[in-house]
Length: 360
Image (cartoon, rainbow, N blue to C red; front, side, top):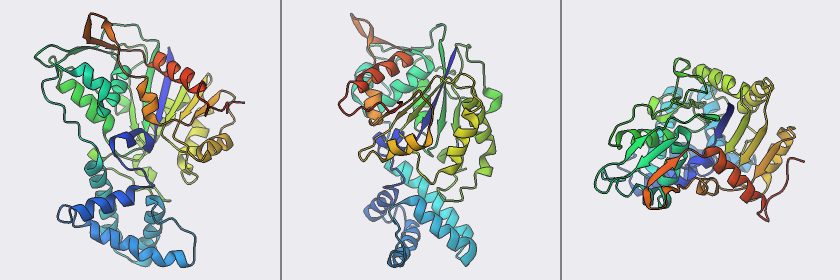
């Protein structure tokens, strides 16, 4: 049994309109100025951000970067007596509202007779395919009723777990949608979120672990992206991430740029992965128009079998698109080839003129 761990960064959710740290403030302003009555409290936070303009006269600073802005304002709150509690609550609330306001909704109709077409063409369909591969799903879409979805009794060769650095609930929304909109309402479509829910990798009904290192919008435990992230609040999540990584055979990074300031994640990887006795691969798929991300990973990783692919997550997801089980019945779909889909992407990416062998 091969243990695969996916590490998800902001680039993973970006195809659904969810902003990254770099464009989060712009998105917040877009939402506020398009509907001030919906987000009235945004004004105070936007005013706080605008008040930092004088910083630029003395320091090089990127006031479009959410982490930098919130870190400066946090210091002012902690040591300058600037309404620490109310400002912190505003930050967290704004993060949640911007994510929920910007995310493309999943609005498929209850009649899912067109499952196959939507899985192939719809933006959300790509994410649902990825989720389907994680759980191993057989989808049988009827002509006039909800799809029937089953988890076939297959002997798994790989187990999958997820470590997310994102606040959004994309994976949870997708899994819940699949379970509740199938005609047979599968209870086994859902992620394990606690140690008690963890099962052995060879259990064909196993639920993948989903660990949220920075908290989650739906659980109200968001840790704001500042230099002092207060990660002790989510100690259980970091412990589970450590356990998962220390047993991994394959690590796959999707849309995480390894920012210089994310020291905690860097140290987690160094500490946990050093315990892995049989790590076979470390693949990074992340958009990288300037080659800076690749440079950071090259400086950070000394693992001979690492590979960097400067591709969008959508390029990776394109390989997840389903194929009919039976050529005469294109409404019968089996999603259980995640390993093969990954290998197909790797082969395709290596043929690209932009590919460089960073493992050397």
